[in-house]
Every structure is written in structure tokens, then in C-alpha cells.
Image 1: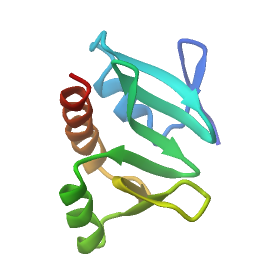
Image 2 (image 1 turned 180 degrees about the horizontal axis):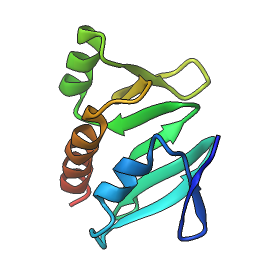
Image 3 (image 1 turned 45 degrees about the vertical axis):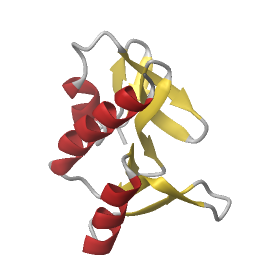
Length: 113
């Protein structure tokens, strides 16, 4: 699988549109963390990442519940059997990822104030 390189950091192609959507926002940083090949954070807080082939976003618990109930996503599992109630994971590729990343960005940025 080819990876897009951004500032010497390999970005998964599926996550590249999300990174591009925040390219002009100086408060958003791209990095790596744990098993994630790509992480976006604002004010030092992660709001979106690409982990083991899934797009993962931090959203309000109610919004995550809606996405899980509709079948669009699942609760993010840290790999230790612990489901994160404010994190949704989505497989495949979706045009809605950028919109969800924007929701996550606003949520995390507001929470960090």
C-alpha cells in the first residue's frame, strides 16, 4: 500500500483527505501515536486518527451512540477490550469522514478550552 508523505510523515492514503482538510489550520498538527499511522490533534489533543485500517474520531458520547446504532460505525476498542464511549471507528472509505473529522475537531477544541 502506498503512503502519502506529509512533512516526512507517512500518511495512509485513506486518511490523506482528512489531513488535507486541515492543512491550512495552524492549530492542527499531524503526528503518530501508538499503532496509529496518522493522528490529527488540536491544542495537543487528538481528535482523529487512522488505526489498523479504520478512521477513528472523538465525538460526544451521544453522537457516537447515534453512529453505532445506525451501523455506520462501532465503538473504538483500544485493543485491550475496552470500548471508548467518545470514540467511533469506521472501516472502509467514506466521504463522511471529513465531515466527522470537522465535528471531532470542533468538539475537542471546545473541550480543551
